[in-house]
Length: 324
Image (cartoon, rainbow, N blue to C red; front, top):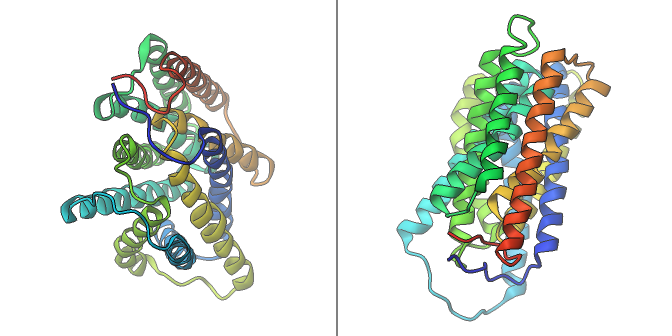
């Protein structure tokens, strides 16, 4: 049996933090779509500026929190190798998640790129969570995962030849989902017995690794925006760096320490719903019949996964970690 995660944060507040993060993430892709049209920035350059801005904004927050905490009771410290591994895994996972997502949005559109990324993520998290963390999926979860895969196939194959869904964009979205799943399950693995680090420090170090990895790619792509509409570009970039990046990821890692990994991935389905609404209402994206059917099947399947997750949590006594 895995013991509940020792944390002073109530699970309800952790759920609220993750919900807020998912909602704001749904606006990041829309802002990126607008920037592609006016700024001249590509996905890699935009991801670089996003993480660099998040890094700059998070640094004073982490320093202030460390000063306010003052001396704390000593506790066993992870080895240098373990700390380095944690920084690299979360940082590289975040790099893949964000960069591949923005590439997918540019390739196949905001609605489809976001739905595939966040629809596939719970499937990957559920499977990896069972292997790595021992989170029981159950029969209902197996059917939900199968339904999600079926919805994804309808979404891709049913739209083939229409131009609404591009296979390359779907592949990038799946790569993004893999990066997300890696960060989610690994963070949950570290936090299952109190071994996780401060969530804001995790966010800061992840941004630092992400920024360093993306710098040469951004330089090759072209790192500077066009002078035309520069004020509009800067405003959108500041928003992306501040709200759906620095604030959202800090709250996300905080909530992830006390909420089951698969539950977190289900809550983040708020993001594709938000993105799809924005894409159709404000960006004039058109959804084909196959896209609508595939998206509906995918989201309904993951909603079923949420119900299976809730029943599993109740059977385990409502704790934050399941039976192995």
